[in-house]
Length: 278
Ligand SMILES: [Zn+2]
Image (cartoon, rainbow, N blue to C red; front, side, top):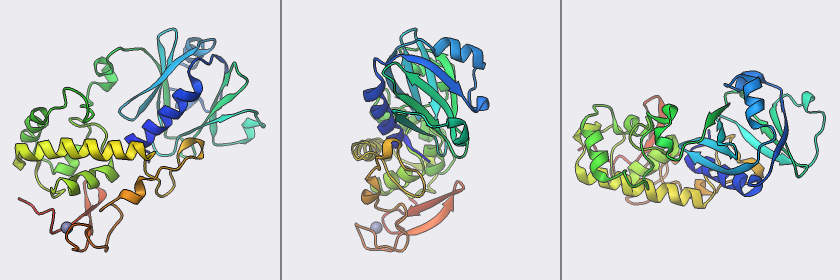
């Protein structure tokens, strides 16, 4: 499943290739993935120039000159391909939408699991004010994401810190891989109850989230299991993982064996010596 750094990588690639292009036509093979009425969706998009591609949380936002935005969530397996020619796409069962561009190229949306979604929404200067994004918190580098803000939220939560971070309601951007890495670097046990953490822990969570996510973005994300990035570019952050998927290996700090437990329904990796419940 793509997490924030992988989505950011896709967004940067799409922005570079699509900015200034006009969408001249569109073919929808799987109408159910488009959450906007298909006729309204087509009318809002066809003939429009792409002004840029942005990201909010794990959403991809293809912004159009008419201030409409195609909002996409890749979910488990969604991918984009930009191609020069089309084969008989109706025979390609995993291609669900094709956008035709005025330079003669095509953007294909491909999704084996069909969980991804697409819809047309209005542009917002501040995406935090968009109703569907209202439940999301801040990315660690956003101005309002201060240690005091995080600490205030921690104090009100009696869930394990891993569950707290996975919820995206306070801090946006940490999925299962990056949560494990951040908690290891912050020396916090994933099952520690959020409200029992100190202000210094909130500071470390913010700091390490920023470091881990920035590094992952620089490396193009993490390539594990089945998710490979769009355009055939594989991320390299898997080489930087210190605990995630490292069960049985020695902790890079103290040498203790990394363990894996199920927490919040997710495989959770940590060092039992560096990350103790306080
Ligand atoms: Zn350790």
